[in-house]
Image 1: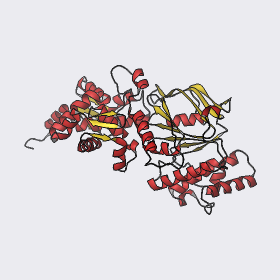
Image 2: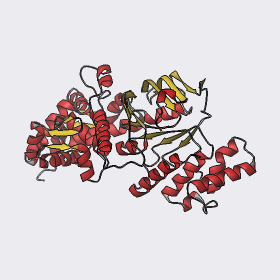
Image 3: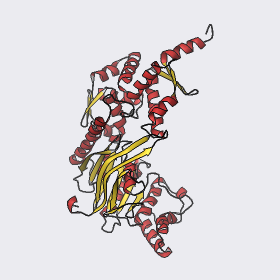
Image 4: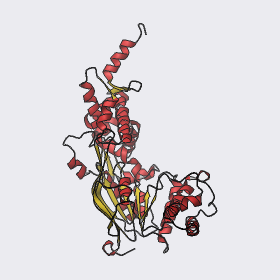
Length: 446
C-alpha cells in the first residue's frame, strides 16, 4: 500500500505505556517504559528485539490481555478496559485444546461470543479451507504436525474476522522449511482483497523474518523495554532476500540491535552491574568459535554474511556477539565485527594462558561474574550459597532469567577457574579454597 500512515485509520493506539510486575521476592520488575505506538489500517508491523525487551508483554497489552501499570491503549478511539474486541491472537505454542477437533478448536472463539451454531460451522469451515486444512476438520491436534497445528491457530484467529491479527513468534516452534512455507502463505493471504483483517502485528526476534513480512519494524531496547527505532521496509512483496535493498535493511536493523542502547546506558549506574548489564546467553565454547571464525576472516567480518555462510539467522549470533563485546574480544561497528588485540591474543594463546586471560576478562568486565568473585572474596570462608545471588538477581529478573543468569555465570567462572560450584550443597566456592579443601580430603598416600 502506498498511502502514508498519516492518512490511514488508526486501529490501536498505545500512549506512554509502562508495565511492571512483582518479582518472586516482592521487588518490582520493570518490563516496559513509556512506549507509544500506533497500528494503522493496511500495514504489517513487526515488533523486533532481543530476549527480555518486552515484545510479548507489549503485544499482550495491545490485545488487552495485560493491563498497563501506566498509560493507556485505545481501540478505534475507545480506551481498553479488558480484552481488545478488535484483536485476535496467534501464539507460539499453538494453544489448542487437545480434546477438541480441528473444527471445534476453530469454533471456540465464536462459541464464546455467542454466535449461533449454523453460522459458527459455516465460518469455521470457510476459515479451515482458507488456510489449507480442509479434510482435517474432524482430526484432533495429536494427529497433526506442528505446521498443521499452527494453521489451526491461524484459522481460529481469522474466523473472528479481527481488525488486527496479533502473532507472538508464530513460526519459532517450527522447523525451517515449515516456517518459510507458512510465512509465504501469510504474505499470500495478506495480498487477497477479502482477507478478513486490516492489520497484522507480529512479534519476532528474527531480523530477516521482520524484513520479509513487515511494512514497518519497531525495534525494542531492553532493561526495561522501550522503542529504540522504527524502520520502514520499502520493498514490494514478495521480497527477495538477495536484493541489495533487503540486505541493506537487514544490516540497518542489525546495527540498531547491536548498537549501544543509550536509554539503558543513561538509566543504569555509572559502574555496570549485574541487574543493568545481564550476561548474554553464550557459552565459552560458542565464544571461542565466533572469535576463531572472525580471526580466520582476517580479523573482520560482516555479521549478516557470516550468519548466512553458517546457515544461521543473523539474530542467532547476537548473544555471542554481545558476550564477545562485553569481554572486549570484539568490537562492532554497524553490522561489521572486528577482532580486538585482546581477542587475537586470547585466540592464539595456549589453553592455560587462554583460560587465565578469560578469567581476568570475565572478573573485570562481566558484571555478575565480578560480583560473585568479590562476594566470595569477602565471605568468611570463600563460599556462599547460590540463594544469596539468586535473591539479588530476582530484584531485576524473572525467576527463569535469574536461573539462566546464574547458569551462565557458573559456566564462565568454572572455565576461568575463578570459582567452583557444588550442586549438592548449592555453594559457590573460590577455586583456591575448593582446591585446598580437595587436597585436605585426599587420602594419605593418594
